[in-house]
Image 1 (spheres, protein in one colour):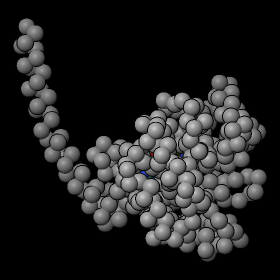
Image 2 (cartoon, helix red, strand yellow):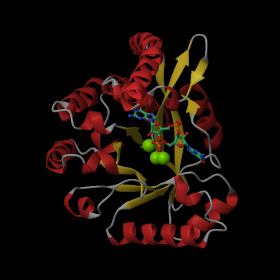
Image 3 (tube, protein in one colour):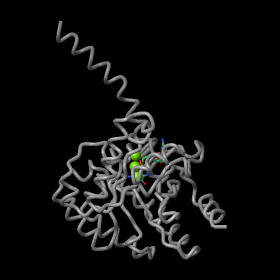
Length: 279
Ligand code: C2E
Ligand code: MG
Ligand code: MG
Ligand code: MG
């Protein structure tokens, strides 16, 4: 009976696997072409600093400007790109374009902004990462101290010795390190002790229900206090309402990101919004 069952199981898997892998290959081809044609581009979401009442900087967020399907969010292609080892191509494209765009903005407004970019765990552990980053900074003439790399805890926990060497090399270029989605993955507070981190980004899952959930309130307060004690900058993600903003601010947070302030915008729209706000 058992072997009969096995036989049936296998044939079932083979039947569904065949067409899937073809579609898979087609998608990879399409994505590679999109990268080559620069259909993948950064959108920008402002980060607000309340003690100076200024825009602190912008997070660059990848979008696929698809000819037929319109603007596609990262959930449609980032994980796929990570699994198929082409995420480095996307990160590099986004970083280079974002450096050019934000440089233009800084020159136009005679003001410094921090450009925050997402780097996948798969990518930052590549041996040539810091050399490549240096080339991007040189080619775009972007000041290293205005760039921040957002890395998740998972990325830091992978091969910590290797990552710490990479981070040292990144720091030699004055580039900042932010911990993205802080508090959500497998983590050890050890890395805060050994690695030179500049900013913690409090994950939006703690902010979402903070108004009526006392556990979230305590978690937010504690992480904000931790950052202050360790002399790290802290940003709260996912600020969607005035209530979110006021409560998180009352806990001592000074840098904010979320739909309450602005959605991620394409560069042209973001430029218009900044120009408007300044008048
Ligand atoms: P993330 O780095 O945590 O980025 C923040 C995400 O939260 C963005 O989603 C942003 O649109 C969304 N968000 C911002 N404010 C709010 C809010 O008030 N409420 C809610 N519900 N969401 C908010 P997005 O653009 O869809 O990006 C999703 C994820 O994709 C990013 O999460 C990041 O992990 C990844 N990603 C985006 N661009 C890149 C990239 O160029 N390279 C890599 N490796 N990953 C990227
Ligand atoms: Mg991020
Ligand atoms: Mg985040
Ligand atoms: Mg997040």
